[in-house]
Amino acid sequence: MKRQPKKPRKKRSGGQVNPALIAEKARIEGRRRFLRFIRNGAIALPVFAGVVFFSVQSVQATICEADLTKVGQGKPSIVQIHDPQCSLCQTLQRQTRKALKSFDSDDFTFLVANIKTSDGSAFAARYGVPHVTLLLFDARGEMVQIVRGPSDTDSLRTIFEAHLETYR
Image (cartoon, rainbow, N blue to C red; front, side, top):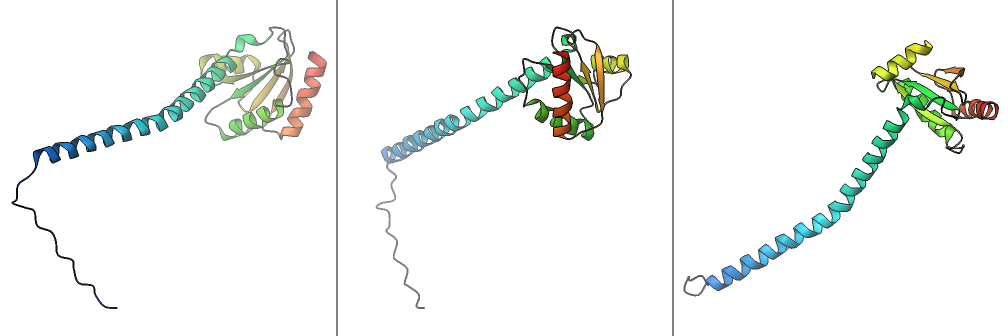
């Protein structure tokens, strides 16, 4: 392949710089920078708002689930004795949540007793159970059943159905 000859460059006339042209280029570049900033902000704002929304929802749900005083308030309760650093506890919680999706949330109260907190560890000690455990309570707050260790979703669903039918 044959090499193309280079095109000669145009020389500046007189070597003088036009200040008006430099000012216009700076103004255009400033406008572009500003518009990029606005565009990126318009993209980032909904993403950030979504993250904040879901974080707040998660924190509120966690606070609500940690309120162990709800046991015995007129609804059957299911309380998980939970260690947040335990993989078996996390598996049990995932399976429990999947099983509970098939029920109306007004029929029961699902709570989590985090053994890393003083309330959670006192609750577990009161019933003499370790983590990776579900405690099932009737509407008056009497413990009626203990489910130990992780279980599959279908087994938990069957246990919860029987519990809700008996103690509703």
